[in-house]
Length: 276
Image (cartoon, rainbow, N blue to C red; front, side):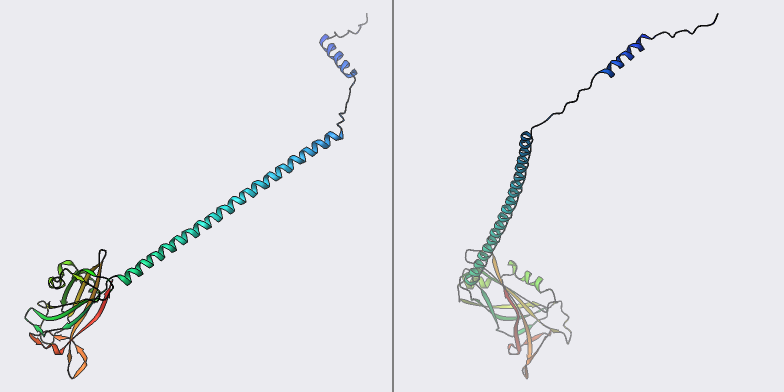
């Protein structure tokens, strides 16, 4: 008996899927197109353009405002700088005016010197009487006037300032001048004189034959403006030398020998005088 072909069993799930696919393929496809009126599109475009113009104007206003603020700040700085310069100039002018007024109205003390005795050498020093004329050439009284004087055999170069400060100290003020001034007040164009025995210590100087001294007198006058500060100072340095009567223009140092040098052979010259 001949074999007959067997039928394959039907899968119900597969059959259902194929049936659904057939139905989907058979479903009609609908297509639609939305038609927007031109009036609405034009209105939308007009609105967008209006917004864009508004944003541009807003940006321009903000930039203009920023520029205006920067310009205002710059002008304010320039004005402040000009006011500051004007204030500095005004202050400087006031200071100059005040200094000018003080310079023209304050006292100015000047000192003249004159030899009044022979120069005498001893074993330890030398002595000479010198007339000091203290003159107020300013336009107001000078108060608390004090004089200090000291003579040195010679001063090393560069030590003048140091010695001046030492001489101007209160410890070296000359009491006799205070007594003469009667309260240490010197009025304008007033002059007071004092003869003070100026001495120098030469004990440490080698007085062998041929040693020559060049005595220097350092003096200081301190005073104040009436009722004011600070203390003003007139300083002077004078050199004591000997000259040859046969040649008056030639001066030299003084031999450090015990004895007397006549005043007629002495010359006193002030090399430095300054006041502050």
